[in-house]
Length: 165
Image (tube, rainbow, N blue to C red; front, side):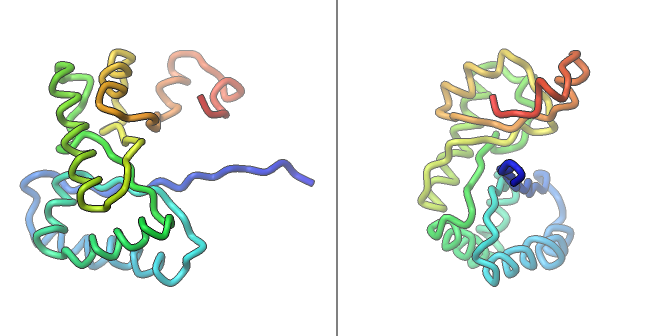
């Protein structure tokens, strides 16, 4: 028998501050809503979902029912909510207090809206700096996802990377 594989499916949904309502509405109709409907039809599909602050606020203004439906899947443990920095800043460019503030703003918004504890976060634009670690922990985050391309560029091999940390 082959060894078991643990696959974690994480989706990142984002629209930038100031994007046109019509553009976001089209993405909602073409992407966000059809995925939600698929998840509602197939309870066996589980995933983690990161939604940026600007997009979450847009949903709250224009389609609060969408967020209610996501919350129902969170309550069923079909979706795990992944936090991040609220406005998707490049955290490595911010001072510590702003990093922590952005992460806490996102976490508090998501926890209030989805009534769940947020323990993980998405790192915007795949930009990582080791100095972010203590600020992420100070903001209450327990885990994050990093792109392996940066580690490979630093000389690590697939054998060193293909595992949890």
